[in-house]
Length: 347
Image (tube, rainbow, N blue to C red):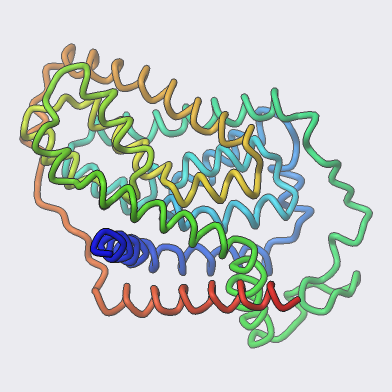
């Protein structure tokens, strides 16, 4: 019973960490859905080509969305006609960077590490998108611009657009889609992923990792294994990486953790598997693992060549989201997920 209570406690703590980012992500997805027409998405991101992957990767870099907050936005892009390759690129480039994380990385780890992190995330996102376009091309459903997909999302009239409606109706449409339709699609899998995350957090405490993780090439593999199932946002992961660097961990291992931690977690993987398929998850993980290891070793080589003392750039950096705000967001999300699950069972 004590183990179950501790797992629930860790799961709730995990939800509290993600809740504000998730609310923002769902809200951002609602704005995308209402104000960006599908033909625009389909035109720029809907083709199985290199340019759509590039655009999706660049589009995701500055957005301040974590690995869970990016999920609803990616689902909205997919439903609007974006190809799997473009969506996969977006799923990698967005949570691993973000304008807030870019500035925080510069403050903590310096300009060289910051530039390398952004460029490496872009390269991995493009690589994953190209793989998806090559191996999932036959699975892409045809996107027909002449069907009813381009009806107004508020009144379902072919001759209207959301911009012709009042501001109040557009705002209502954003919230109805974000926390009704879209949240309902992923509620079950979000709850499952949060529970799995609670189990992982309880069995693999952060103190154990920090106590026994040493320096050397093996730390790159260790941090990859630790980072994949954990939930850490791109900014929140920085103090952990900085503390480990001060203990002697090499920059390559820090980079791998800052890549795998924000890009993947149990919640993201379960939702991606359900919404995009197991093959997409396989390409997603292979791209992060393969490219992450290679770029981690490359960073160690570059660091040795430039002979930079990274400890000079490390400073204190903590999350600034108030506890009361996270609690309100958690209660709001949990209520919404339970409501949608009960509603779906009654239908």
